[in-house]
Image (spheres, rainbow, N blue to C red):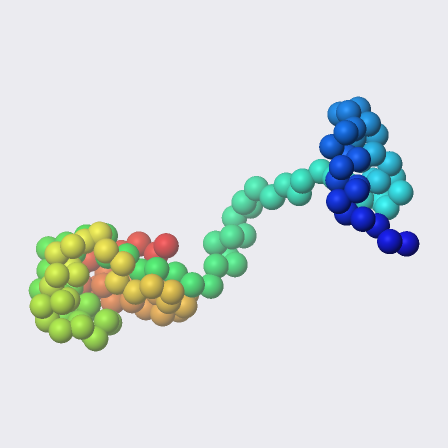
Length: 120
């Protein structure tokens, strides 16, 4: 059985909407399929539980900016000037793609010195 795709397409181009609708229904019945587009399920709250990587965002350095800069240096391994620029640029991502445990540890470290941190 040799099907010529071009011939089939040319035949379909000449068909009316009603004929094409009947064709779709016949194909659905014959092959037990549906032509309906799949619908994504609405988020049920499991998305956060399934998330494996987090971005740690320094939202605000707070009152103890010097302590936050020191923590940023420890976390990122950056020099003093780079860490200061990072803190001064808040809100800023401190760590991208961190595991849940690492992200929570970093958040605790920074919040411990007065910073405001968000996990994304």
